[in-house]
Amino acid sequence: MSEIEATESVLFGVSVDSVESHKRFRTEQKFGFSLLADTEFEVSNQYSGIIESFNASKRATFIIDKAGYIRAIDTDVNVKTHGEDVAALLKEVLPKIEVGQPAPDFIATDGTGETHQLSELHQEKNVVLAFYPRDFGRG
Image (cartoon, rainbow, N blue to C red):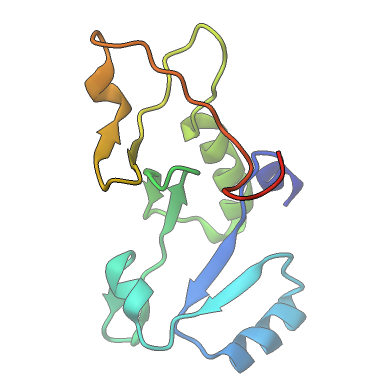
């Protein structure tokens, strides 16, 4: 799990099983990550789809970056090597922000409701992104 955590990522397992079932399964399998109960099939329908004959989620992995963009979808999951495969995929697809490299694109909405996309400003304006901890907070 440390290779995944090293990419500043959090891992969740998702299935249509109950919270109680997840507690037992996590204890028995000694998982080091949280299992999310999608008992209403909402997340599974949106992301992986449903195997109707089993009434279960299809096996798939989605990598979503900090900006909320899906960077990779793996629908050919090998259960035996899944952890290693996810760690390698994270290193491959997550943006690496370094001086001299292209900035990852993003879309964000300001206080007036106007949406801004970084790629729309290329060739038009220099952009300054000034990050701060929180509104009305210290720092």
